[in-house]
Amino acid sequence: MNPLTEQEIRAAFVNCSKGEAKRLAVPRDLADRAWADLDFLGWRDPQAPDRAYLVTESEGRARAIVLRCPGAVPGRQRRSMCSMCLTTHTGNVSLMVAPKAGKAGQQGNSVGAYLCSDLSCSLYVRGKKDAGPGARLSESLTLEEKIARTTANLAAFLAHVTA
Image 1: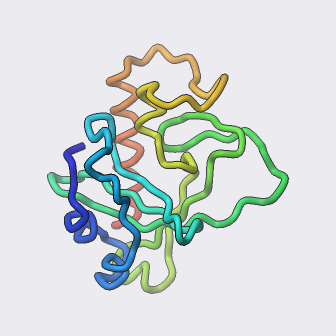
Image 2 (image 1 turned 135 degrees about the vertical axis):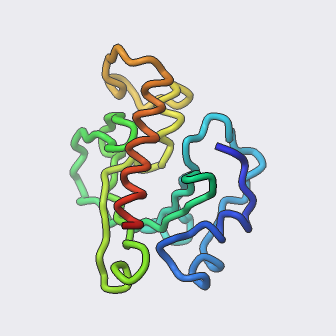
């Protein structure tokens, strides 16, 4: 993924108003991110832990979505798999819900997916971040094929949000 500025990120949101995009918390460490290892930039809002944001490149431009993260059920630490990168975690996969773009989103329609709670899918796929024992299933796919699968899953999720 190519490096993005705060202004480019704010302009890329497709499922919130311009005012909301202007007010949301963008990471301050954009210059320090390992952009070459990212298929998308994802982060949780430190001021509102039930909100997350995801930015990727689609059709030659940055596209970003707002996500809601409903609270986890206390005491439930079951093993779950991220639908984006297929990494399994114990208690670190969250249902994230994106309001649909446009009129459908204004009517309350949304799309959900189970994602790594820290939105570090790109780093888990590349082995740059460890999710613990048994987190990555043994596969015959090459790293490039795993990355392609993750980006295809991301593109499908984004297509559902913008449809």
